[in-house]
Each structure stands twice: as C-alpha cells, then as structure tokens.
Length: 285
Image (cartoon, rainbow, N blue to C red; front, side):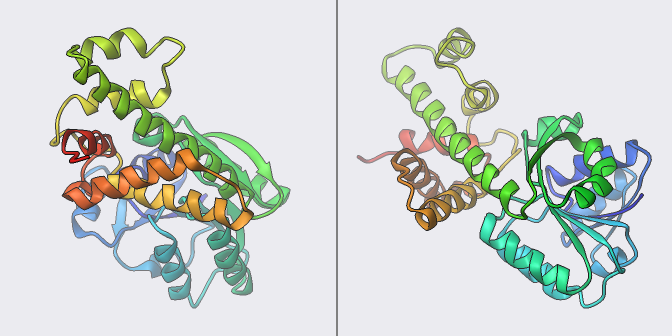
C-alpha cells in the first residue's frame, strides 16, 4: 500500500520503518528538519510539506497533541477520495471524534488506533494497537497496522480506541510515578536502589513500568529520552479530562498528574519521563 506517515518522532520513525519492512511504500511528513534528516538517513523519504500525503492510500498520524491533530486536519483542503486516515496519536476520545467528523466531511475514512508499548516495542513491530472504526475500514488498513504490532478490536465507534488508551494511560501514569516513589523510598532507607530494583521488579509488586523505567531512573538526568515528561503531562491530563467528563473519581491519577507537572516545572519537561523521580530528589515538602 502507499502510506504517508505524519510525525517521524522517537516512536513514529521506528513505526514507519516497520511498515516499510512489511513491503509498503512510505513517505514521511515531519516538520523538524533534524527529524527529516534522521529519517532520510534510515532510508525513509521525508518532507516538511503535508501535500506529499495527498495521493496516499493510507495516512498514519502520529503527532503529539490534540492541537497538532486539529491543525493538521485543517491544512488538508484536498483528499484522495476514500483515503483512509489512521489516528495513532493519543489525543483523547473527544478530539478524535471531532477531527474524524471533519475528515469524513472531506471524503476520508477514519480509523481510531492509538498504540501502547513505547519506543522499544515500536522498534520490534510489537506494539499493542487499540483499533476502533467500521469493520471495513479496519480491515482495509489491517496490513499496515499489522506491520507495527498486534491489533486488538476496540469497538465500532470512533473514539473507543482512545477511551481504552485513556484507561491504559491512567495505569501507565500511576505505575510510573509509583515506581519513582518506590526507588526514592529505597534510597531513603539507605538501600542500593539498583539492588532493590533487581530484587523486586519480578515480584508481586513489580510492573512493566518499574522494569522499563526503573533502570533509567537510576541513570541520572541525562539518560536517553524515549518519552518526554511533557508527554505524560499531556497524557495524564487527557485522562483527567476524560474522567471529569464522565464523572469518574481518579485520585491516584490526580497525584501522578501533579508529579508530572512538578517535573516539568523543574525544567525536566524535555527529559525522559523517568526523570519524574527527581520530584522527590528536589522536593521541598
């Protein structure tokens, strides 16, 4: 299939690479010049002009925020009839429904398919994909989705995939902050956090977030960035907004959300999300 991939960031680039490996042609759209250079160095054609996506069979969207998705949809004043758009960004149910309606009015077919698994799983084509939309639409884009990971049906309604991702991000936010607090506790108990991590990560108290982020929490501020603190500011904020909209109480999420905000306020927004641990290191409470 002829695929346009919009958003060649830390997770988008390896996702696009997996699509190419599956035999599809890919042209990337990336506003960052540095991002385009990295993509081209890996053999992916990349442009800063959205119009290269006009003739694609499938447009995969991996932008960072709801505002970026809205701006992108507004730019597309011409679409290939029947072009399928796959929104894989985490933007929340309300945003994806609104933008999907605008795309449909322009002649597109939309699939809501947010992902989880992070950069590590993106590089191996083993992401978990929550796909919602009509059976025919999901079936059409299945060859592209399958190149990136395991596709799970999230429902027939656009927004159902985002709603499931909201639940997923609730857990990720809370587990990530809990892991940071636990390793900070280990230090306060005069234990070697690395040794504690080795012992507890596969026990009953372990979590995927502890095993994945824990080692980076111990590496210091300059550890490599796979997902920024500001992404979790955004994602935990989407969870909070969705919970408020349906009247759900999420006190643990509220605590985690505040920690990510605190980390961003400390100047760690562009650092790896594991640096939320520094809100304990620098705490004045």
